[in-house]
Figure (cartoon, rainbow, N blue to C red):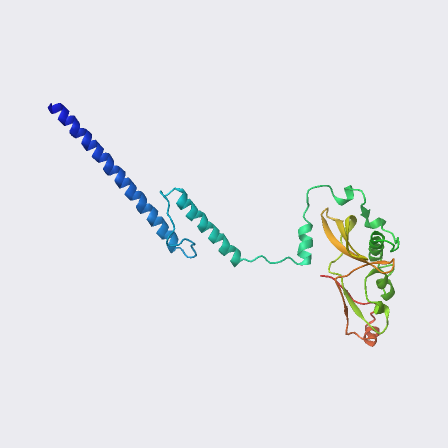
Length: 250
């Protein structure tokens, strides 16, 4: 009889101890959870509100959500602190200069080496482009004058008049290209098309540019970025020895 009572008391003590340990563990877990949430709330820029559910445990889904929200808020602050600056035209060209997967333009059909370009006329956008590159490659032998520039570029009708002076802004520079390949043609409006051109350079890099061609009664010309009327008078032009308008590049 005494043995049975002793065993019963021992079982009761074990159950009470286990219950006390379980209660203590749950109390400690809740304390840790509340402490973590309080620290997150006190952190500057924390998105956690007063009613955020800390979750059932320090490693539960509730606190994982709190952690992820904190990381998102930190990334948002970093983006706002360092805003993305739009690329300039030359920076865009430099981005394109990185090698993309695939063969080089010179390894594909339709590639035209700059050493082989010819003055093939202006009857089509592709022919006008090749004629333009031939003129550009041979400026030393045949310098640009007003008449020649009017043949190549989409400019006002009085461009070659001695009483006016225009400045041409190409919007892109040329130099170092060893060849090109036209990869696409898109009609923007009747009489105006956009050519996609892949250029290969001496250093082995290559890039893509878009060039707009404009039709003038069957005579296609390259459209510059802008053509502005200069304040330079005909007398000033003669004094400076400038026979052709200024051509500027970025």
